[in-house]
Length: 292
Image (tube, rainbow, N blue to C red):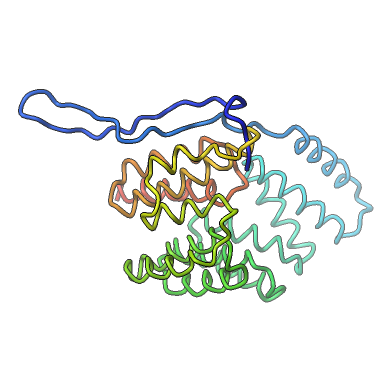
């Protein structure tokens, strides 16, 4: 994830902390948050969707080929944020080819986003039954369990996910998020242990260091453009940074700031990223709690 600062629009969002005095209320900026240009749809994906649609109009195609095309088009719809169209294609594909494991994985994610957790578990169970080497089924089932308030079961899936790639900072982060719902001190200790084995070449180790208190928030934010060489890479990095900052503020009980960061993650338009998908779910859950 790489980009020269000249290639993107840099700005700052001041998150204000009010300080009440005996005279005049004052607001002091505590963080300068960088932002970039939201991604726009890749025209090549739109052209590919048109081509797949033309192929699907040919009724002589065998069912398994139609299923693959529906899956491929569904993935493209999903990458453009067209979730309803994606879900229609995934459901059609799985009816035509019930052993297409990847379709169940996407359907599970969609059920999670709709807060249909039982259906999500069934979809991810189907993925693992068809292909137990499908790493991301463990991540996605773990996320569904996490949002379904089954942190103990989520911990097991995230542990399996981390074991398969122990150098991956994102895997360590999701394990921490689940464990922190069970025992915050133990979760921090485990994250500190896992930090020693992480790949320092991955920018995401900075998120782990932020969570561990080894890196200040201001330094974390000022480092976000390091090594970036495209607007897309910068938007992707910001999407991740905003989401995990939101989770950090959420854990501190600062729900307003957390909501702002979730909204910033959505504003990047990085629809394919886990962080973008679940930022919307986080906001839905926060809205539901406030209405309840």
